[in-house]
Structure formats: structure tokens, C-alpha cells
Amino acid sequence: MLHRIMDMHILLYAMAGMGVLGILGMAAVCLIYKRRMRKDSCMADLKEKWIKLWENRDELTQKMNRWVWVPSFVSTFLLCLAIVLSEKVLGTGMVSSEYLQAGAAVPIVLLVVRQALDFTWKQERMLSSMIDYLEAQGNKIAQIQAAAAVSQEREDAMVDYVAGGIKESDGGKGRFGELLSPEEEEIMREVIREFMG
Image (cartoon, rainbow, N blue to C red):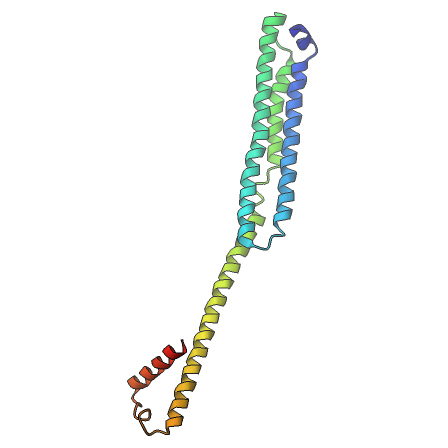
């Protein structure tokens, strides 16, 4: 049985199959990343969009790294197994050069493909999403501050109007006409603000 495995080069084909499986797995992860980026770019909430982009990137980077290292380790294990089987079963003590070439080529090819399909450097979209989020938050804060300033101006105008109405209705005489000192006028304005609030 072991003679047949070595004669049919089953371990060599398994090593090549692990390399192809790793390449296909990395291509699938890269495709999933592109689809998620496209789907997440349609989100309206900028904070959620930015967080999802970072989470997806980290998660898919780990998956892509697994598609490099697991097939590489399995390929190396199969190379060691082929060396042991050729020593023990065939008695030659030498493994064919095809096994050594495949054992060296699979991890190298997987690392090269990993670098070619690498999407971690594509941070422009994530950074632009973060900038959009920060700008939106800044605009929201500016709008709130502008609305508060307009509200304060309206309140001051209303207090001036009511204070002017009180002074006019009294005609400068009586108990409100005598409150013309600045301190007392400010007290009257505070009372009006309290009444309005």
C-alpha cells in the first residue's frame, strides 16, 4: 500500500492540491472583502460604516493569513512524510526532487499570492469613511452651537421686548418707572427670563 502511494506520487499531488486550495481560499476571502466594502459603502450611519470597515478588514485579514499558513504547514508535513516513507518503505533514503521542489514552491507561491491579494494597504476608503464621520460630527456640533446661539438671541430679543413693553405701559411713572438704575433693570430682565423659562 505504501509502495503504491509513493509510486503514484499521491503525496506530491496532495501538496500541489494544498497549494491550489490555499490560493482559491485567499481569492475567495478577497472577493468577500470587496463585496462587503461595496455593501458597507451604502450605509447611511457613518460611525457604523467606519467601525464595520475596520472589523471586516481585521477579520478577513486573519482568514487570509490562515489560508497561507495552514496549507503551507500541511505541505511541509506531507514533504516530511514523503521523506520518511521513502526512507522506511522504499529504502532509498532519497526522495525525488519533485517533492523537494513542491515542498519549497507551495509556501513561497502562497506568500507571493498573499502579497498580491493583500487588501490591508487599501485604507483610503476606511480613512475617508473616518474623515466623513468626524466631519459629520463636527458639523452636527456646529449646528447645535449655532442653534443655541440663535435661541439665546431670540430669548434676549424677547426679554428686551417685554421689558420695553413694561416701561412703555407704565409711562415712566409709578413703581416700574423708578427702576431705571442698571442693576435694577438687570434684575427686571432676570425676572422676565425666569418667567419665560
